[in-house]
Length: 112
Length: 110
Image: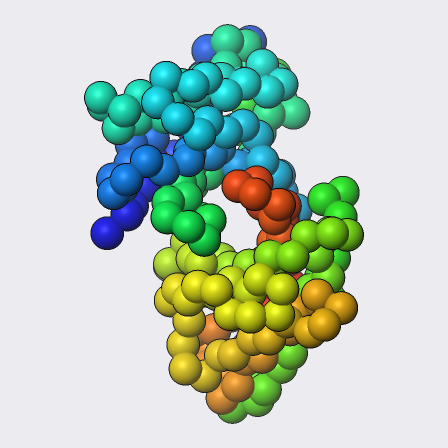
């Protein structure tokens, strides 16, 4: 079945450090890929998405490229801020009904 | 603010009881999804409705049921509650591939 695997956290970084959160997937067909972010006490917000191979999603300085050959969708940011501290979820949807399958989530803590 | 509303925000109840969680989708969105977020199982898809009809089912227990009404709001009914049902329940609505999530209902079963 379809599944998403993302690196375990927590990831702890200093402000302005480079961020990478790894995400790989298993899916039949051609899934759409997403990164969602959950700030403390809040619901999930879509951070970025990519719907086909080699697409790059980007938003708020975050980027991820849909790599079909490595079945990956790693999240990167060149310079993190304290306000980026949150839990990040990689997800995919496949098939006709768009239900999302999530990874386990990676907690990011950024210190000044 | 995603435009998706959920009530109540918190719910505390006892084992064996029944509760109803409510979700109002964004204006114009026909699809509603329910997800459960728990510490041991992570975020799991439960069920999807589209314009009043059930579209897809995930890991939803038989004790749980849902429906979508003509005004497109949805309710998730959880019955014979167990301690393990304690979780955050999210509703999302969508147009095409992008889903917008509500703030969630935190259910605590004592």
